[in-house]
Image 1 (cartoon, helix red, strand yellow):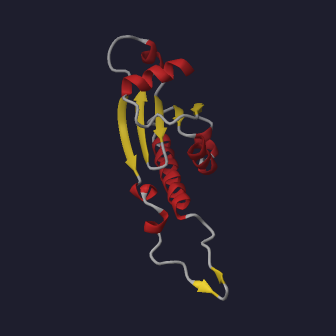
Image 2 (cartoon, helix red, strand yellow; image 1 turned 135 degrees about the vertical axis):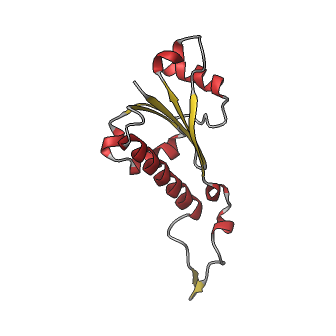
Image 3 (cartoon, helix red, strand yellow; image 1 turned 180 degrees about the vertical axis):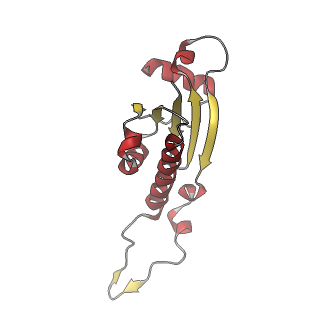
Length: 144
């Protein structure tokens, strides 16, 4: 079974291809990097994401209804979902393991279509984006 592993944070994502049985096998490379996605806007400070200072209206101050940083994280979550949906429609994977911090996982889940959601086999609410591949495999073996 073709299994993809999405390891994501609010500004970076890595997609690996694997066969779950090879994760427990001591021979050969266990993960194969398929794609890396980055969203540098999610790293910027709020002040850098807005072009001008907020204007004043009367005695109060106008507040943006959406936190600019959260908005950029949401844009990245949508980009990830579109990318995965396209790849799934092309039959590049049959099963998905999804690893991300809880807040970002929630953003992705919010935009995930049903046909993609049904192939998610495992969700792990952890921040493993900076883990080397071998360490990631060790973490995965605990959950599988």
